[in-house]
Image 1: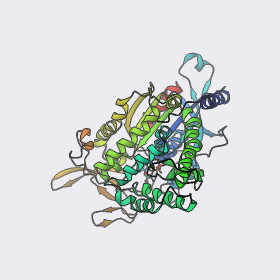
Image 2: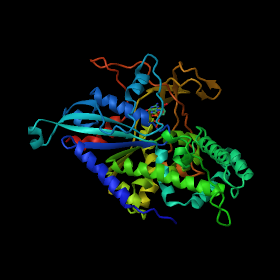
Image 3: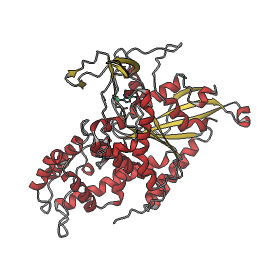
Image 4: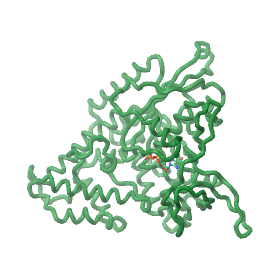
Length: 485
Ligand code: GDP
């Protein structure tokens, strides 16, 4: 198997990046926080809520530096790296807090933003020197991009074999049909035609997209950039697909040889630079997981999410035989796993949601220790879209959540209009988290639907809108509390 060397260029690139960080942070230390998760896990909402709560000094009893009164204030400052898109905080906040609050557009590419925090240090020596500052650099990137790490150690033939086996398995055959038909109609030994490459790539992408539908929620299919291409959309490095391995070596001008070259270009132009230039410079990481959507979609989706998380978490593992992974993962010292959208459940179930999340990441954690990094799991809602109530049904008390389902959401025969508030019994998560991964385990009976964001927000004494949350303060405490000591 072709094992990529952690070559000297990578080593130097990472070292220079860190040196640059040290130089710009000469007077103000910088904490680089990576925010990731698969598409629609809740990254955009998490970052927007986190920044807004910091900027408005909101009530966060679980966030030590604020609760102790040591955090003096926060402001957005210019990021010294002018080559990366800025996280569109203002636009996202406007969507959530404008006249008709709606969810903003989700993460589609990497972006970053800097918040500078001013605090009174508890350390007597630093404290005597006056207030201290910390630059918090938040880096938002699609979790799908992490799924590409294994590709670095797979040849085109090895990857093709895995991808084709997956496309042909029973659960995928329907989604993959147009791709498999296109594949059957093309002879990869013949001279390469761009139109053939495009047909294969587009039908393969269609299949990847179909497997991400809500009802199926499958999530483990690299290449990650096919669904979230960022700025390279349409380029040859993104226009390839898996091909059956031919019996003999193929000519240089054959379709097979062309797609093989493109696969290698994908790795060297997109995958490797992302890990080297961005991932390797993170200090802390939060991995957001939409466990509820997978639970709602059924055991196949849950098993698939577990596999995806195991692949994603491979990027954080120590002891990997791959020297490139050793090189990129060594800096991160805390990883928080967060099950998002906990406001879809009654708070009595939050512990169970955490237990499910723990179970989902357990395999990855057991297989290899994370790079000496401390890890924790938490159920949170970055923005709470529901409230809680108790109703009586047939003499029985039921814990319900109250919210406004998004337009077009359904429950039984009912289709909602985006304006009607309802009380919903969200269902129960199993007592034993283990059972969600057993195909014959207790079925999880959830009523999961999308809710509108809160429509009437309370305001602070300064007139800033207050975004309600669940445990966001505790997430912040784990991720940056110790840097504000
Ligand atoms: P990402 O950027 O692709 O990871 O995902 P987003 O942050 O855009 O979230 C995707 C969708 O999930 C949003 O449009 C909301 O519908 C929903 N969502 C995200 N966070 C929350 C939350 O805290 N509570 C609720 N009720 N829904 C959320």
